[in-house]
Amino acid sequence: MGAELPDYYFRVRENGAAVFRVDTENRQRRIEMDQIAVINIKNGEVKPQGDRTLTPEDLAEIERWMADRRALLARRDIDDIHRAVDYLNITTQWVQSKASDEQLEEVTDALLLAMHDLRSLLVRKKADRLLKGQDAAE
Image (cartoon, rainbow, N blue to C red; front, side, top):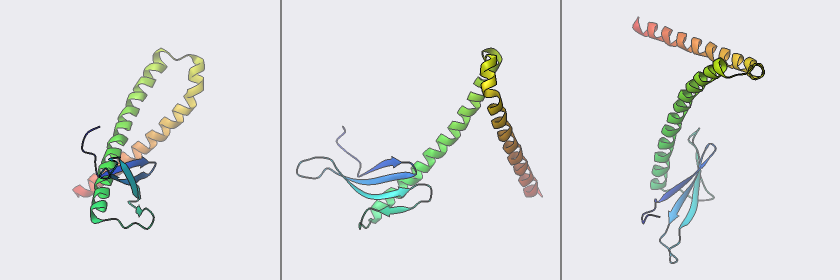
């Protein structure tokens, strides 16, 4: 482990993180982690742990982490969509070259409904964007 540990540790949870202050400045030279807050990334809520009051430094570090985390999650979202496009292409190739009649019978209806739903939304969103572009041009 490196000599310099961060002052804060964020244990990622489903909708945010538990925030710990890291302390190595004790007599035993052990790493101690003191939970100071719980944060919700979706609504930006920061709940101090117990009767603790967060310092401006605590809040600044939490805000920095939340901004970094939101950016990471946004990058992951778009990466997942690019992967979905790849999976659709792989699925098309599988249907064309490898799928048995039994396998096709198992997945055809679910795929057709999911693709119809996706196509409907994509067409509607594209039309909305085109209309916004026309309104802005006028």
